[in-house]
Length: 252
Image 1 (cartoon, one colour):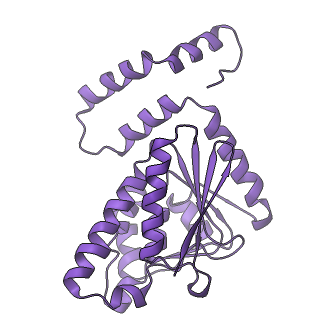
Image 2: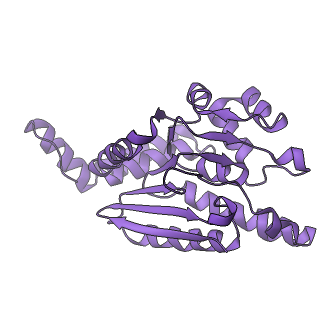
């Protein structure tokens, strides 16, 4: 049974996928723990950034635990594994605070689908990304193909899914699937730099900007003025404006 190990360092919450015997495969226990952490993050506004990672220096996740989902009746598999799993993934994607996936090794199937729910992705040059599902008579059921299409385009998403192509770190960077690639020994420092910067920005503005980017159904003529007004009326906005004119750095 897998675990989701939570560690708090100031305003940064790190969630580590842990299922050592299965290269951090995702199972019901991990999905349930992720759902609990999402609720905790939404309640605790002191959390300003979330890091999702696998084993330090090793696998992010080998994907969904095949032994677990293959034992389910098809209807149960569709409803609980795919349907409820997608609800959890969507909630994670829409967290009010920014999220970063650190990918240091293999990131396959459902693991890649989960990484694509993060706002930013940092990879080491040992990262390997792949959707292997069609090769075993399955599909990326946690909306990974759709998310990859929005990031990299339809042709590349179809190439990744239909050919089960393994994507190395340089290719992932070229496609825009990851935001940066670094050497393994530099991952900790680069991640710390990113999370420090995320914790310095206005949490109110960051949450609003993120929500606007993720909402594909919005009427931009209404949504942007409404969101801008909401942020402008906040204490964060006044703090930022005051700091700008005082030629200092705003502290949120």
